[in-house]
Image (tube, rainbow over the protein chains, first blue to last red):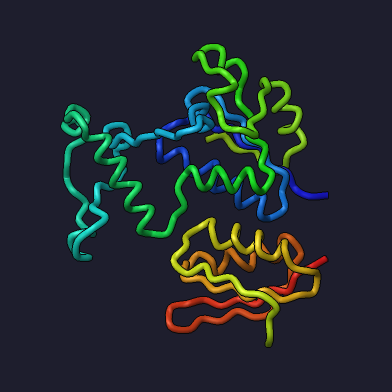
Length: 167
Length: 76
């Protein structure tokens, strides 16, 4: 029987948007049955338009590099103190577009593309019903193909899964 | 060794070479050979791991001018 993988996606920033979709699409390509349970801040990753951002202020180890210019310039890790960057208006938007550009340059698919691949490969994307109610999401806010369930339904699958991850 | 179909994943990073290869080989028949071309160094281990996991046979792996070539025979 094929392997099963159960993922809980609880984070909604851009850097945390990639791992669940990357691992899920890869596992599905390896013929595993995959379910991702989107809860708390992971829930917006199921919206029609993904507007996830990344904030350097909350990620002290995040390198600040420029995805353009000569190689030596790109190698510079800009020493911008996080205590400062956190207070500069628009800094997170800039860091977000730089990260997207960097990923694009390196041939990494966008989060939206990875999500589409997951659906095409039969990954089950589950929205946490409770979180939806708490944060005021409705079924129509999410893309087609999303399923809706609670913790018990997910755990019933996770109990039989070979790989269980929380992200 | 000849192949029946080919997919060029040059410039693509993880997990695209594996995902695209999977989608391509699914359109082929058991016993047919898919040629995969990549430039992602990670794919050197990823493509064989994927093939081994799903029961495809890795027939050939080669590297030439910064590109990686794989011949994978589709399993049943």
